[in-house]
Image 1: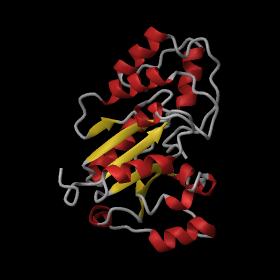
Image 2: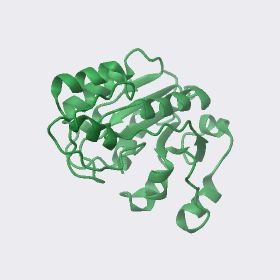
Image 3: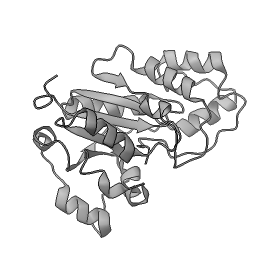
Image 4: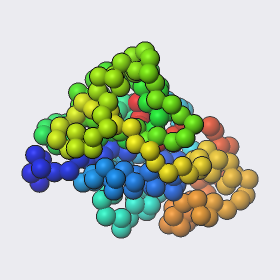
Length: 230
């Protein structure tokens, strides 16, 4: 593919423990509204922001593949599951930049994750590698002070074309549909013996039922909604 004319590659990371319609709807809206060529779901291997996942890597990867199967523009990248050590976003973006030196790459994160960006590993090295697209929902406010406020003032844009004409360096805040679905609450629901139907694709629900991955384990809280892997 000619990287100079290829539409931006969206990177959507997270534990996806499990993946649900909140993740999928956000990715789909980004794909359509921002005219991404592709949104790549990237399950986190060893998340530095939380303890061990409830479902193992193979199951989480299977659920993400089942959830995205057949949707044009969605893909799955398992590189963080194959890489040893903590799944730092800057390492993933560095690898992607080596593969696609000219293509626009956009890291998709939630506003909650963006507000915590200064705690990420080598966080100032992210913008030279990729754009940051912040999925904004009601109740969250973009920072206007401090390091993030300065970054938004310097690098923020409201022009979608900026994401297409440059390979990195911009911050774009985009409103998305609010779906109050949480992976933590889904795990708690399943552990309590209730059915997660209509919170996720049936193919994902079937994997959960057949594996029993959340039935016996206590559901631990985690900030996995729209999280890149830090």
